[in-house]
Amino acid sequence: MGYDFDLITIGGGSGGIACAKRSAGRFGKKVLNIERTNRLGGTCVNVGCVPKKVMWSAASIADVLKHDMHHYGFEGGYKLDWKKLKNARDGYVKRLNRIYAAGFEKAGITSIFGEASFVDPHTVKVVGPDGGSKQYTADKIVIATGGRPMMPPGEGVKEHTINSDGFFDLEELPSVAVVVGAGYIAVELAGVLNSLGSEVHLVIRKGHAIRDFDPMIRDGLDAEMTKAGIIIHRHTKGVAKVVLDNSSKKKHVTLVSGDVIYGADVVLMAAGRVPNSDDWIPNTAELALENCGVKVSEKKYIVVDEHQNTNVENIMAIGDVCGTVELTPMAIAAGRRLGDRLFSDKPEDSKAKVSYETVPTVVFSHPTIGTCGMTEPEAVEKYGKKNIKVYTSKFSNLFYGIFDMKPEEKPKTLMKVVCAGMNEQVVGIHVLGMGADEMMQGFGVAMKMGCTKADLDSCVAIHPTAAEELVTMGVWGTSPQSTGAKNSPLGGAPPGDPELS
Image 1: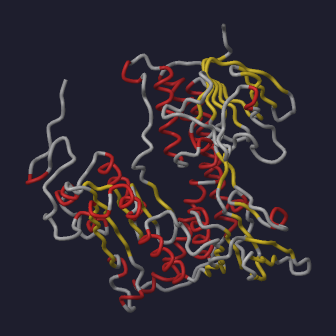
Image 2 (image 1 turned 120 degrees about the vertical axis):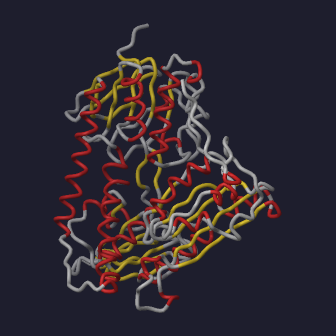
């Protein structure tokens, strides 16, 4: 049977774009991409990683101006022009939208905007912005629709709060902001708003934010957020209701615990994300998965195997809609590897897949967090306490060395290296502090290659940096002399020679 396209990717975000471009650009396949909104790039580019990093950068500059510059002899005031910042940020995002569109055009990919739903396993109906509909067929279809912010229940919540997407629509900096949530989005946006000058209340259901992170990092961020002035409301069990005062236009937030936060300008719900699988967002069509038979989990994530296959032979799914590792680079890697497996004629690509293990990630909190691999409790549970050795360090970055303040008052950097087995293989690295975001990528490479504590020690430290602490922990050079490297760096050995043709 002839089809209109070799491949249809539903979703113009990170995963869908990566799979489409790989399939068309590398293998010359005829590809259609369908995006629900009127702009390419998905959550990351439009209302996620990219604009968030811009706001985090602005907040970091504010921190230096407010707290740090006078220690280095600088004096003077400053004023935030929120409108200028927002316009510059939004302009940058629009440039990225155009870059993605140009990339599609260069690769020969057909790109359309509209609501997609399945007619059968090989046919998709698209309702365009003008209300008209058209059907398209393809040999293979990839679902890459991503996720959306979850709006928890509660009286007045939908009417008087915004989600993380709405944060980027704010026309001014709120004087008082309530951020509800305990995950990385919540702590990131709470930190941004606090550093830029808002009074910030962070509402968490239990005792700590980022509970799934290593306890040392979790507790360290908690202490730094408190020191920075963020008001943390603990053990609240969530929000019961939000009431708008019509005279003052302020919101009053009643928590399930009974506490009330009065006079908020903005209430931001950052309670997590859900998959765009059976119910994309209000007032839009559904994917109609019942028409193609694709199975979803109880939480509405699309069920896939390690190769991204659904239960329907020609339909695959990648990215956040699968609920495995919900990170932009993960979706990109999965999309590219899927393109290789589907269309490459190389035997080694027939089983191509992405690895979801030992994935480095960063939280753009204030201060930042970098993490890769298992937490200490996870390692103990998997390998047993007797087989785990942990190295830790706590210090103030040299940046704060000349600050005229007590040592205990200076911001702290925390580091932990979790090792397992007699060879002390590194199974977890966790960092909180200045520069954590930029140092984790390289250590992630080492961990993917199976590095040991001895391998870390074998690398000469770069001085003076914070990162050098990760290769000098404990009594340097006394770990078991075992390497995870193909060419051992131990004992002063040189790196191996490349394999030349």
